[in-house]
Image 1 (cartoon, rainbow, N blue to C red):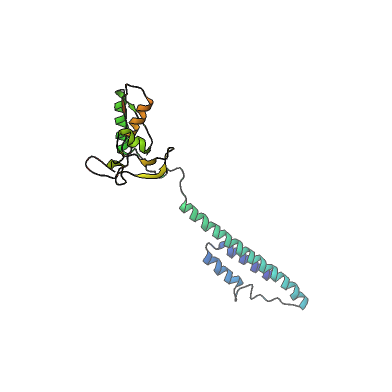
Image 2: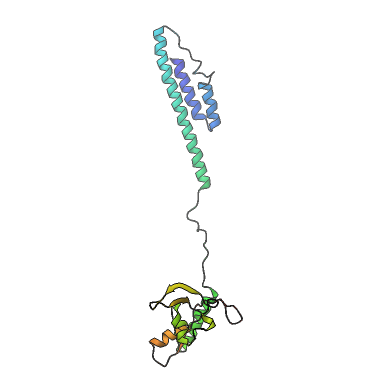
Length: 207
C-alpha cells in the first residue's frame, strides 16, 4: 500500500510543520476532511485484497489521528510555556513593602511623662480599668448621693464585685492611688496615669 504509506508520511510531515492551531487544522482538513487524501483513498483489487487494505486503512487513520493529537498537545504546551514565561515573577526582586506601624502620639507622650517622673524618684501606679464602687467613690469620701455616682456621669457594667457591690469603668485614676497607698508605706511618691471613662465632656474632661 505505497499510496497509503505516502499519505501517512505526508500527513505526519504536515503536522510537524504546523506552527499554530490554525495551520494544524488546515493540515487535518487536507488529510482527514471530506475531500482529504485519506478520506478519498479507495482500496482496489479482489474482496480479500480490499479486506486487507481496509485493515491497513484503519491503521493508517489511527496513526494520523494520533499524530494530530500529539501535535495539538505540543502546541498547547508551547502556548502555555510562552504565557508562563511572559507572566513569570522574579522572586529575587524585593517584595512589596508593607506599612510599618508606630506608637500613637498620646501613648508616646504618656511613656515620656512616666520616664521623667521616674527619674525624679516617683513610682507609677497601676490598677484595673473595671473598678469597684468602693475604690472609685467610697474610699474618696464621696457620699451616696454624689452626682458622680449617677448613671449620667458613670458607666456601670452588668457585674458585681465579691461583696455584691456594682462595678464600673473608672472615671478617674484616684482608685489607683488608693490601691497603691494600701499596699505601700509612707513616704509615698507616685503618679497614676491611665485611661478613664467619662460621660461628661468639657474644657477639663474628655470622654
